[in-house]
Length: 392
Image 1 (cartoon, rainbow, N blue to C red):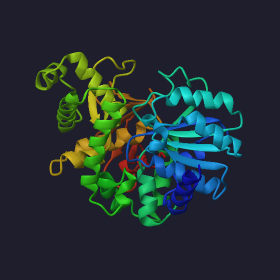
Image 2 (tube, rainbow, N blue to C red):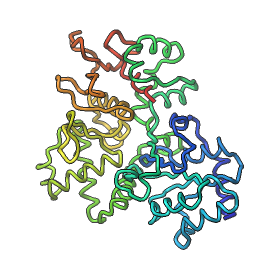
Image 3 (cartoon, helix red, strand yellow):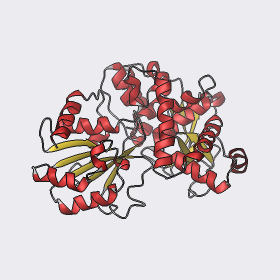
Image 4 (tube, rainbow, N blue to C red):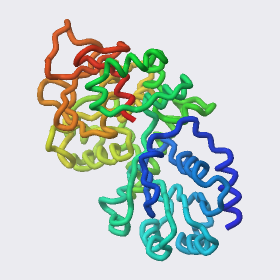
């Protein structure tokens, strides 16, 4: 136990989280079992350690452990939690939970046996903590940790503190909001760097970002999909090829029959792979209102613009980039569907958007909203694209 405390103390003392993540204030920390989901690379470990630092400091009633430890090949989580609890422990922070075989059953046992113990655990975005998990679905609250928003990236890079805004606030007051922001900083100076490398916090590390992102993407495929979904390694090459083909044609309607021929697998398997790639947050799927998996999506998008640059270094389509940013920014908090009215997106079955460099020849639908690139301040139903990066 003492070795875990030493590791915890070192990690908490050395954690660096230059941006306070909005999720930190959104979580109900009084709940006894909390799951933090997120794709690889978005900062789940840092998030847990920052919580320990901010709320407990050197207090030994909180302990961070990582299931990478070989200790848990011989000892159970329940045994460990019992010892921690007996010594006065109150909050366990569990990282890399999916690497522990019986994690959900033992989390349930810990919850039932130790009534004053709080457990916060991290999990891959591929894990279905509530939908398919009978052990803990009635006791766990699940939250999603996303990559940096443009707001978080801008605050960090410019050394300022700008608040987030709701979608309704942006739509109703975007001119005033943009004017207030532009009095402090020129957001367009930072927008293209964000699209290239600002979503994943590891851009702060002194390593080549693109190579690091490619490594992270492959880990998503090899661990978050193959290991968690228990897919044989021999199918990895098919999933990698499918991902590449879809990313190169994104955004676009997937030709499942053609893909099944190229990948040499069935149509049903292609649809399953697309679902897994979406769960891993490598892709996004766009449906018309009322449709969802297992139906074929109307369009497939790359999950975020950083991934576009990692795969297509020199051939970024600016229209695809605009739409990918907008979809990624909106889908975190809103329902995003295919729009029926020759526009791009329908948000929450209410707002209709088109993403453009500028409305063609000044002609546009009066009832539609326009997310427009390369402008700092909009007018009426023309809203700067970058401002949608302030939703969280």
